[in-house]
Structure formats: structure tokens, C-alpha cells
Amino acid sequence: MAVKAEKIRQAKKFLENKQLSISIIKPRLFAQASQELNKNFNQTLLEIKNKLYGKNNNSDKKED
Image 1: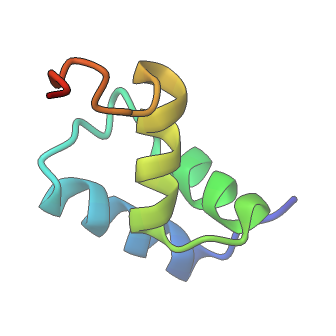
Image 2 (image 1 turned 30 degrees about the vertical axis):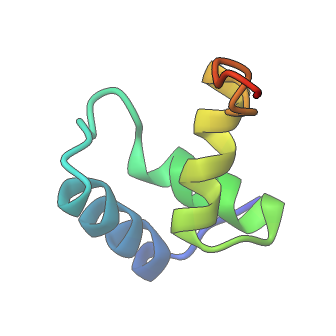
Image 3 (image 1 turned 180 degrees about the horizontal axis):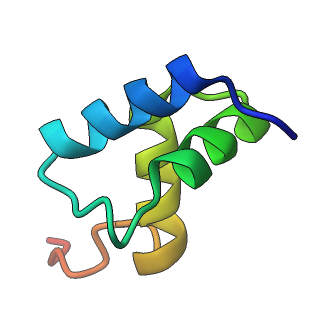
């Protein structure tokens, strides 16, 4: 699936603003993932983080 150059530039700027290395997360692949998920860049980043690290379910909290 082709990603437009404008979306790639936007993804690069988004990743730079989040201080993420574009050598690790390629802007083209990030933009493509965002397009395929039908989510914006912030939602896509959260989705990736949840997949990598698991969702925080607050299981470490003590219940009274």
C-alpha cells in the first residue's frame, strides 16, 4: 500500500517531536501502519506500545 510523501513527512515530524529515533522507527513504515490501522499517529504509537509492552491494567495496585 503506497503512502503519500506528505504523510511520511508528517510521520517523521511526529516521531521527532516525540523524541523517538527515526533510525529505529522508520517514518514510512509508521505512516503505513497508521494508514492500515485507520488511526492517527498518536493512536498508532499507543497501539504499538501496548503490543510491545502489554496494556497497563494496574495489576500492581493493592486492593483494600
